Length: 337
Image (cartoon, rainbow, N blue to C red):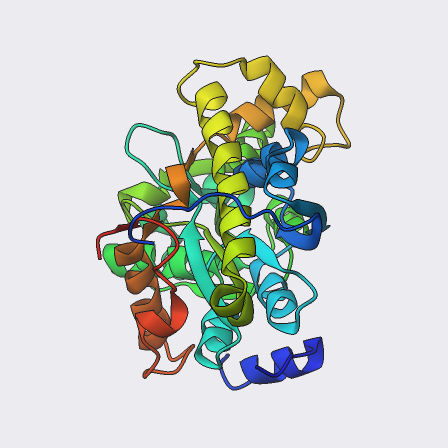
């Protein structure tokens, strides 16, 4: 397959606004790989796998590359600048999958009943003006990173369920959205709890609803790689998924099951998340970010199909793309297939 540079990968996007589980780790002779991530608690599976040597035991010499949104990460995978990544499905990712550049190979963050999840927020200005429930966002401005982002999907699914209409305002980066929420330039947003709760605690925004009430069992983020890696580098890819899955299991033991030290896990995550804060100030936000990361990187393909169908219904991706073009289901257990 022809390697794409970033310009070619972006050009491909411009036309759109393992059934049996993971195999044994590959002994890849200290193979250098770049892993794309966001500095979110929800990316802790990769951080734990790196810090505790699980990637190294799989023969991988991992280097992280950090992003501020999902779509640029998809471009980096397609161009070969990043080998593996964890992030939400975006219109750009789907379009690149249609062109044969990207494959989703596993699942990561999920909404799960009984575990606090993503929140719908109102700016303080909107809240004071009467926006106290998601339905009250009718006619208001809802922040997204880009058209075709997971924020766009979440907002649209809520709006459809409530029978309301909103204006979607693309602000490119999470930091820019936070600033716009604080200043009242936008009225609503949806985001993971480790960002939502501290902002609400400061009075800058208000929590007005739960994403899970509108999108139950939502496969929020997925593990993905280049189509070339999925097809031609099976041992390497299995090694990455094995290391990642061991990191996820450790994370769940500490942060959800409470069968391992939460303090030790917070110390580890703090190396990557809220690094500009002292540990004692960062810890509550890290803990607030605890959500389910799928054991064994299992993938909820029913949720992925729902997302694909929404992108198609909005005209954000080609109507002809199939789930098989987007997902390589041979690497992990699939749910809802």
